Length: 248
Image 1 (spheres, rainbow, N blue to C red):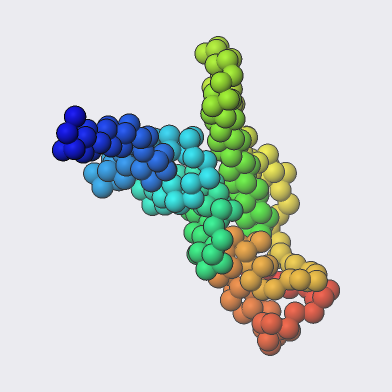
Image 2 (image 1 turned 180 degrees about the vertical axis):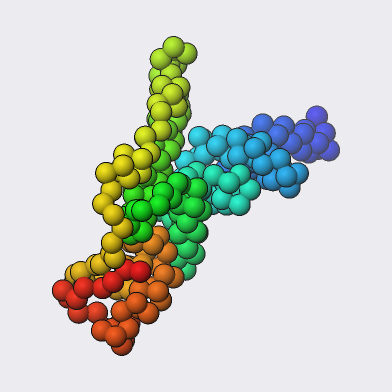
C-alpha cells in the first residue's frame, strides 16, 4: 500500500471514529428541551409545559427549565401553584443573590394571583382571611412538590435498572389521584367571630415589610400599616418590641 492510500485510509477511519462518538447529553441539547422552546415560540403552551416536564424528569436540577416552566405557568397557563413550585426550585438552585431576589418577587406575585382566586366571604377578619389563604396555597404547593418528587423517584429507579413499576401500582398515578386538600376557608368561616380590628404585637426581628408579607401576602403593603399607626410610629424603621400595631 503506497503512502497516499495509507493517508486516505487514516482519514476515513478518523471520520468513522468521530461519527461513532456519542454527543454530550446536556439538558440544553436534549430533544425535549428543544421541543419545549419551539412550542413556546409557536404559542402552543400546553405542549411546551409537557416538554419541560420531560426535561425535568431526566434533569431535575436543570435550573433554566424550572425558571422557564415557572414563567410559562405564571404568565401563559394561569397556574400560580405550578409557577410557585418551579420558581422555588430555581431559587434553590440559583447562586446569584440578585437573581434570587427577583425570583422572590415572582413568588410573591404568583401568591397574590392565587389568593385572588380563593373565595372572600364577608364578615371575616381581613388578616385572618389572608393567613388562611396563604395556608391553603402552601398546602396545594406542597402537594405539587410531592407529585414531582415521586416522578423523580420513579425516574431514578428506572435509571438504576430496577424492575418497572406495574401500571396498577404506579406511584405517580396513585399520588395524582389524591384529592386536593379541602378548602380551609369554608371550615373556619362558618365559626368565624364578627369582624374586628386586627392587631399585631411586635416581636424581635419584625419589620413593617415582614409584617405586611405575613398578613397581606405582599411586602408593598407596609405603607398602609404605617399610615394606620403613624401617630405612634413616626419612623417606619423604629419598631419597638411589644408595640401593638393596628392592621387596617
